[in-house]
Length: 61
Image (cartoon, rainbow, N blue to C red; front, side, top):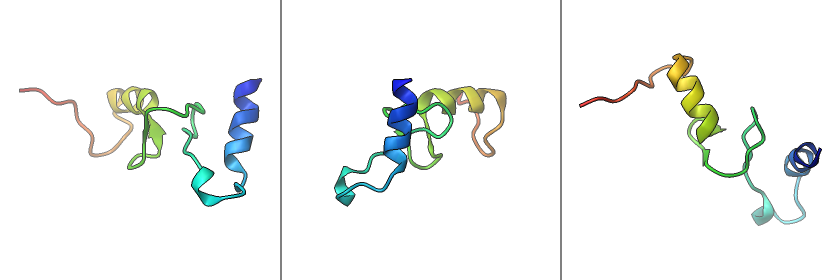
């Protein structure tokens, strides 16, 4: 329940713009956010592994 309320709180416009922070739109995680893909690292890894993010491939050398 706390996560839903924090997601709603993050979605609102803050009193001061510097108080804004990013949350993953898929799971609501506030940490490990990747701006370029607009999601957290956990969701990014899962979707990249499934091949659902175009242009992202697993590296190997």
